[in-house]
Image (cartoon, rainbow, N blue to C red; front, side, top):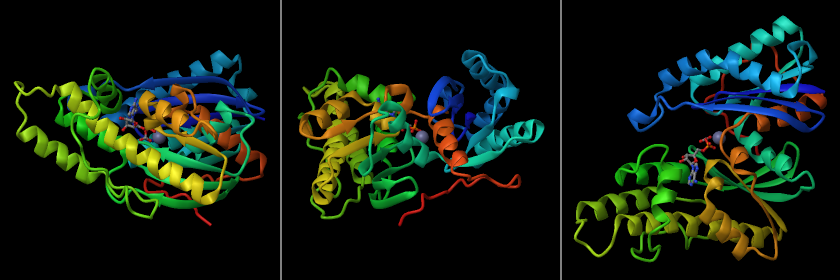
Amino acid sequence: MIVLGIETSCDETAASICAEGKIVSSSISSQVIHEEYGGVVPELASREHEYLLNTIVNKSLEKADFNYHDLDGIAVTQGPGLAGTLLTGICFAKGLSQGLSIPIIGVDHLEAHIFANFIADPELEFPFISLLVSGGHTQLWLIENVGKYKLLGETLDDAAGEAFDKGARVLDLGYPGGPALEKSAEGGNPDAIKFPRGLIRSDSFDFSFSGLKTALLYYMDDYSNSNSITLNDVAASYQEAIIDVLSNKLIRAITYYNINTCVVAGGVAANKNLRTRLHTLLSNKNVIFPELDLCTDNAAMVAYLGEIKLKNGEQSKIDFGVLPNLKMITF
Ligand code: KG4
Ligand code: ZN
């Protein structure tokens, strides 16, 4: 089966072709228009998707050496995400589905992030624990099979990616914040400041990052450049607090459920320090991180999951709508 995947849940316009479980092309355009605003402006993001989608889809088809009539189905992100940007992708996908008389399926963006790990490692087997760390979500899942997911814990306030973004904004490091903060942290001392590690002592698998952000704000109120602590030290210490919490909770979940494999998905999985830390702490386990372009938003994960679902006989009705607050079903 040849499936076109379309992803427009936020500020990445992406299309990909999956043929019999193999990603044969993946095209993406990251919108730079938001840089000057320091964050994604939803209306601008929708307009950019509108403007770029046709080109990106054509590019993906060309790279795969297919044309529209080779497609057997279309998968499109249905949620969670920004209502307007999701709508742009869904309308485009519905038009194609109707015009080509092929089935369409709306895909859960978070489930797709988790399934990106099967693209990264085709040998991946159930069950596994997934740490999902994106701009809007921080969740720990026990993944038992396709469609059989148990939510173990999640953030009670800010997501880990949001903590990176807000921290970068406080430190005036630019946008997107995660990579900028990681870069600034490279030259710094992670032990310079002991920032709070939210819920690290709690028995639950939940997270909390809002206290960390507040602690950074207070710290910067009193910060002076003449201080022996550099801004790189501040960035490194802040990043260290996030990584400590993420790795601590993941290791606790793996130990509690006695699971050998864990996967890390979502934009924050691109963080090299998190990758190194987990590989070191879990050297006796199977730790999987997708390649960087599969960690952040992409359409390969949508096409891949869409093909699995379409092959299972699932399909969306043509009047399906956006689900900006979609939550993955837990058992
Ligand atoms: O999964 P994603 O691309 O989009 C959402 O679905 O949210 O995740 C985006 C998030 C942003 O908050 C971004 O700052 C963060 O992932 N991120 C990073 C890194 N690259 C992206 N955070 C830390 N280190 C990185 N290298
Ligand atoms: Zn995402």
